[in-house]
Each structure stands twice: as C-alpha cells, then as structure tokens.
Image 1 (cartoon, rainbow, N blue to C red):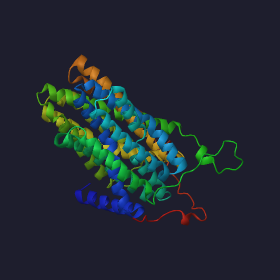
Image 2 (cartoon, rainbow, N blue to C red):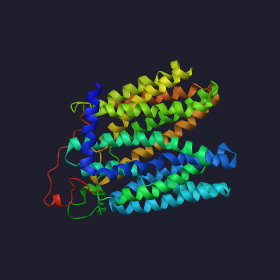
Image 3 (tube, rainbow, N blue to C red):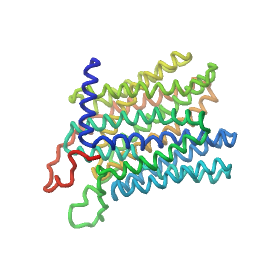
Image 4 (cartoon, one colour):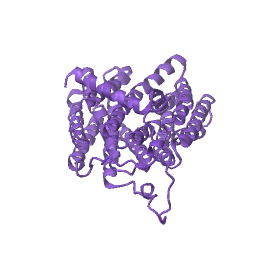
Amino acid sequence: MDGSGVRTGAVARYRQTRELTGGPVLAWSLLGRLPAAMCPIGSLLMVSQRTGSVWCGAAVAGVLAVGQAVGGPLVGRAADRRGQRRVGLVAAAVNGLAVLALVAASQARTALGWQLLAALVVGLSVPLVGPLSRSRWLWLARGRPDRTAAALWLDGLIDELSFTSGPAVVGLLATLTGPGGGLLLAAGLVGVCGTLFARHPTAPPGVPAIPAGAADGSGTAARARLLTLPYLLLLAGMALLGVVFGSVQVGVTATTEALGHPGVAGLVYGLMGLTSACSGLAVAALPARLDLPLRLRAGTGLLCGAALLFPFAGATLPGLAAAVGCLGLAVAPQMITMFGLVERTVPPARLGEAMAGLVSSITLAQAAGTVVAGWASDAGGPSAPFLITCTAAAAALLLALGTATGTRYRRPEPPAAPAGEARHRPERASA
C-alpha cells in the first residue's frame, strides 16, 4: 500500500461522502461533537482548580461520564422514534444551558451537590452528534455499500479529530483564559453547531414505535429486538477497547510522573490520536474483498501486539511514546469496523440507539478501567496499569477470533427501493 494509493482512496471516499451529505453538515458534525470530548476533562480541570481538590473534580467528571453513558441510548432512541431534528434541537439547548450552569456553579463555589447535579444534566443531555451522524450517513446511503463504507470511514476520522483536539483545546484555554474557558466554548459549540446539525435537511425522520399487537407488519422494524447476540458481542468488544484507553491513560500519567516529566503526559497520550488518524486514512485504501469481520480480527491482533509493548518499552519516555503510537495504529480501524458492523446487527429504525449504545459501552468501560488502573498503580507501581492494558487487549483478541465471522456478520443485501422513495431520499443534500 503506497502513499499515492492511500491519498487516492481518501480523496475518493471524501468526495463520495460530500456528494451524499453536502459539505456544511460535515463541519457541523465535527464541531458539534467536540463538546462531548471537551466537557469531561474541562470539568475535571475547572472543579479541581476552583475547589483545590482533585477528588471533587474527579467526582464531577465521573458523574458527567455516567450521565453520558446512561443518557446516550435514551437520546438515541428518542431520535430514532421522533426524528433527529426535534430531539437534536432540544438536546442542544438543554446541554448548552447545563454546561453554563456547571460553570456558574463552579465559579460561585456552590455546594458540591449542585455541581454534581449540573454535571449529571450535562451528561444526560449530550446531543450525540457523533452517533447520530453515523446513523444519518447510513440512512442516506442505504442500499449503496460503497457510499456506506466511505461515510463510515470519514466519520471515523472526524471522531479521531474530536478525540484528539477536544482535550487539547480545553488545556490551551485553561492556560490562556482560566479553568472555565474550555467549558464556555463547549457551550457555544453545542448551542450553535449542535443546532445547525439538527436542523440540516439530511436529518432523518423518526419511526414511531408500533404496539406489539398491531395488525399489519409496518411496525416490524421498529419492534425488532436490539440486544441480539452479534450486537452484544460488539458492545463487549467496545468495552474492552475502553478498558485499554482508561488503563493506558493512567499508566502514561503515572510513568511520566515517575520519570520526572509529569507535564508531558498529555502530549504522549495525544500520540495515540495522531497515529490513529493516520491509520484511519490508510483504511480508505483497503480493498473491498477484505470484509469487516476479517478487518476486526486483524485489527484486534494489532491492538494486542501493540499492548504487549508496554511492559517492555514503557519504562523510558521514548519507549513509552513509541508504544502509545503503535497502539494508536489499531484504534481507528477498530472503531470504524465495529461501527460498520452495527448496520449488520440491528434494525435500521434503531441505528441511532445502537450507535449510542456503543459509545456508552466504551465510556463506562474507560471510566472503570481508569479506576482499576489507578488502584493498580498505587499498589504495584507505575507500570502496573499496563498489565490491565495487556489483559483487556488479549481478551478482545480472543473475542474477535472466536466471534467475528462472516456467518455472524453477513453483508447486507441491497434493499429494493419502494415506490415513492425517491421523493424522500435525498441524493445530495443542500447546504
């Protein structure tokens, strides 16, 4: 795979996605999902500095993360049933106001309970621009596998950009404007860009739930079961990836501190996002014959191999940076593949809820991995969290080898277009 092949494949897939969606909504999708990456670290920094207690900051950030994990599937389900426009507009408004309330409560040094309440509302009301983008692209590209693959590839890159740049923007603003600057920007982004994303003409309509006793079959898709075995396996795989993230973050922080360079922890961890974005670009050049289950098995093998570098190379700063960079090479292909497999496991009418479920799975698992790795670091030293990383990656590899098969995740058959669909299916979205 040479550089020209990667560039050609990337440009072709970008053009396919732009023709499918229109240009502006891609920008709203990127900017609108940044707050979800900014608020957890932003709340931790702000509350810790205002209270002088890292525990208080961690408590607020933890409650916010739990709110995201619980509220995500609820918002996704509501968007599937009532339409992304209506639900997205309400969520963007509530979330923006809740972020402002959290900043105000912190600046006023109100009781911790009020700050925890505001953080919970922030988490519960996240507009889910990322998961709803994926379900929106799949809805627009239905029946066209090439467009589906292109849209999921580009969305994976956008996710990596938000994952990498969100915390960096918060850290920069915290230095320049104070601890609340990042959250104020997040409130503005979610209010403006979240609203523009929700109002865009590409927003799919909802599919109302049909009572189980309905006489006709029109409600079959809406009633179809979400928690099938293939989908549960994807949730488990995403959770193991979350444990890898959480344990590596703690391990990097503890190791750099032990080496006498605590300030470089964020830069070292950021290498994961950089190399992940590069590998995401390379995915565009993969031939179609390499189906998603095979990609998942290969990507998980790469993840496990990279994780095994940490116990041997993680004792020095250059070795630690190299291991983090190698781990990042497996991240974007893994996430792009698992989000792509969701389309093969859930009914189309519940895609938004299913995508949100994957995000909730990785969020909760990352929080759990962080807690367990923190205990391991205190008990066994700065390298102990990397043993959790290796264990989670090995479990993910065993899971993928045993379950990611073409029989379980079959390629979808292109559906026949029903009469009159042309009136409701935009071939190219307007600005």
